[in-house]
Length: 113
Figure 1 (cartoon, rainbow, N blue to C red):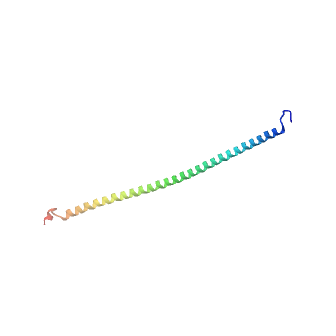
Figure 2 (tube, rainbow, N blue to C red):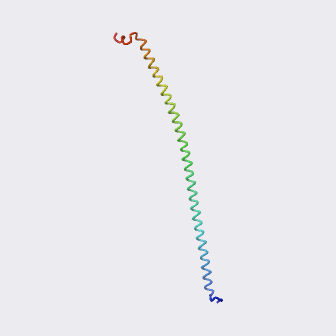
Figure 3 (tube, helix red, strand yellow):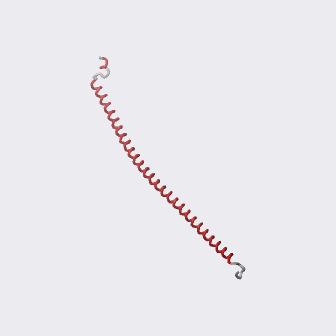
């Protein structure tokens, strides 16, 4: 026995308890660090996937904008062509009316003959 009245058996238990406590603390710390690392990795992967999705959406929007501009240019061209055709039909109708009036000397009187 020592001067405190403690036997070696008690010191062995205290030492063993201290070692187990330290090992448990280390184990808990390692588990927490692994969990935090896993969470960070998951967050990073999620952020990467979101960035890729945003990039794909931006490309899709850009493509759609270009298609819309091309469609609008085509609509404008077709509208211009339609206006020109309408003008030409109007002019043709006027020429036909003028030609009919020139061929009929009496206008509607010719219909009676």
